[in-house]
Image 1: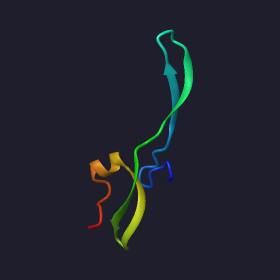
Image 2: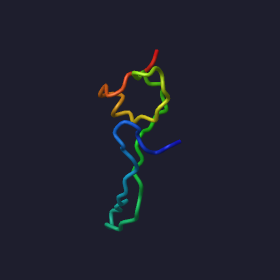
Image 3: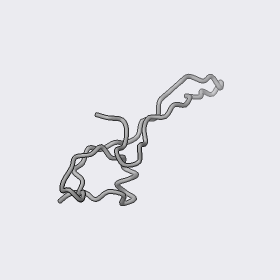
Image 4: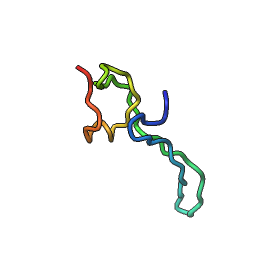
Amino acid sequence: MAKRCDVCGKGKMTGHNVSHAINRTKRVFKPNIQRITVQTDDGKEKMNVCTRCLRSGKVTKAI
C-alpha cells in the first residue's frame, strides 16, 4: 500500500529513537493510510487517504 495521502500528500517522516542514555538511532514515522472509496464529482473513486483527512472532512466516503 502507498505510504502517501492522495489528498494532503502526507508521507513518512524520519526522526530518532532516544534512549535513557540519550543514544540516538534512526527511525521512521509512518502515517495511518486507509484505502477507501471516496465520493468525487465524477463518481466513486478509490483513494489512499490519511485518517486526519477523513476526520477533518476533506473527503466524503461513498455510500
